[in-house]
Each structure stands twice: as C-alpha cells, then as structure tokens.
Image (cartoon, rainbow, N blue to C red; front, side):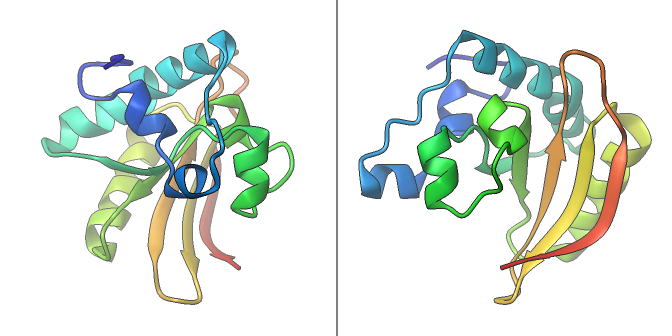
Length: 144
C-alpha cells in the first residue's frame, strides 16, 4: 500500500470499478502521483482531520482512457491527479458541511457541488500544486 498522506492511499485514489470491468490500467505517472499527494496534503487530509471520520473517494485519478469511458470532460483535472470526487453516501447535510469547510479552510482550484438525475450527490474538489488555484466555486452542477 502506498501512502499519499496519513489516511489516504494511492490505491484508493486510483480505484475504479469501470477500469476493472473494462480492463483499463489506471496507473498514474510520477507527476500525477505528486499531484495526488498535493491534493491529499492540502485538501483531503485537512478535511479528514477536521471531520474526524473517513472521507471516501468516489473518483480520483483517471487515465485518459478511463476518463473517456466514464464520460469525463477532455482535459479533466482527474487525468492530471489534481481532482477527487468525495462520496457523501446520500447524506446531503454531510456533503454540504464538507463543501463549506473546504471553501472556508482550504486552498483549492475548483469546488463543485455535483449531482445526477438519479439523485446521487458528491463534492468535486481540485488542487493545483503549481499554486495557480482559482478558488472557483460552483454551488450546483447537474451531471448527465
């Protein structure tokens, strides 16, 4: 197991049921791993420490092939190791608490409250290790 921070592993940030089902090798390169470490240290681990309970990753790093397979946008920060979607397990109150905490306490590039037509919600957050973080907040985005 490769630790990216105290509580987050490379394996959980690269895990994908779609990749497994389709035989896609979702393996980040050295720069992408460094970006995942930065995301963990600047956003995910501080959130985990503040909330004092597990923060599940729904989607972290995606290679280009996996990103296309899941309908991700071209150039997605997921393909750079700069983004993660946080599972809130249907608990919108918890999700909004996480969203607000990240917005108030972390440096980030994008913070998006996302949902789909099926009623699933998640928090998308990204961080750029180069320091060029826009602090862009999107309070609601419907994904198809």
